[in-house]
Image 1 (tube, rainbow, N blue to C red):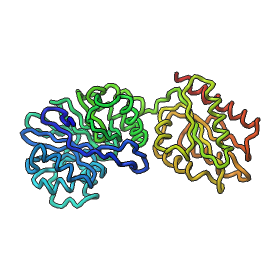
Image 2 (cartoon, helix red, strand yellow; image 1 turned 120 degrees about the vertical axis):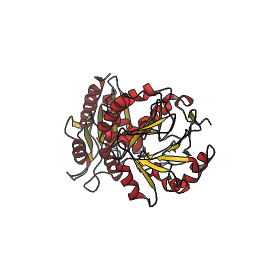
Image 3 (cartoon, rainbow, N blue to C red; image 1 turned 180 degrees about the vertical axis):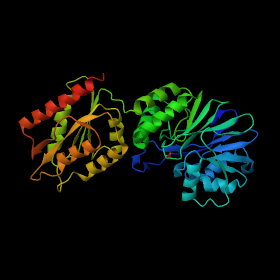
Image 4 (cartoon, rainbow, N blue to C red; image 1 turned 30 degrees about the vertical axis):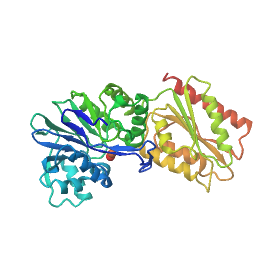
Length: 395
Ligand code: FEO
């Protein structure tokens, strides 16, 4: 496995082939926790790995240099998938300074026993010379936590971008041109939608900061390192940060006795009369990770639930809670679903949730008492056409 980013700069992280859950995100492709070793007059390590893998991480470092040669350990982000190994490496490298910003220091102190750690607190724009190379630091708040920052080496045109531009993707290869581009771009999109979609504004500010840097390589904290497709991932992020609508309709639903399902299929058929991509998901057979990824760039969305106990289906509630937290923008749509006797719950509740999410509501919820009649299905088809027409304008 080639781990060399530049001469004297190596990947020393951990490939997590089997992880399948990341606080709700179904990581079907596993992940990596990327850490990097820079060998210069002074040696620095960028980030660590999840706590259980600290021994393997230390062994990676030891395959290049002794642990007592490490002068600086940079923590770009305090989330435990990257900082969990910090107590282990700080104990193994007692002379090393932990380099981070003030917010990160506080977060690390709240997570770990940091007694005896040597701190080197940096502010936005600060620099540390390693000899031939310089570490410079760029605060990137809310990408992904308040303390997040980038580390940049101007002499190498190399950006350590922490969570930004990452993918939950395990692979024997470390670089973007060693993997199929469509696969890693899809993984980057899934990662963006499920981890940072709600931080579109701070990420767009971060992109503006990054655009001022001369970048030849981007080394994120997860997945492959970008060296051949930087333009492609930057352009994709420019779209994702604003949830830029594509000519695409998404219909997702839950159903008990197929009434809401029949409505969903008919709505989709209406949308398909237009020249748009159209996708249908049953929340009981499709994980929410996939659904929010598809919502990220759709122009129009219809969401359906039957009425259960004066509410909505629990599986749909789970998806709606997740989607609401991730805050997709620039979407239009409507709610639909069936009911028996209760005016509460079901389609009305979904409609209110969509309003709360700031989805632009195109019409009142379509409601079917028990099985949908031919007339009601025609209403669904017409509503589906309105979704298709809305999405087609983005072609
Ligand atoms: Fe990969 Fe926000 O941690």
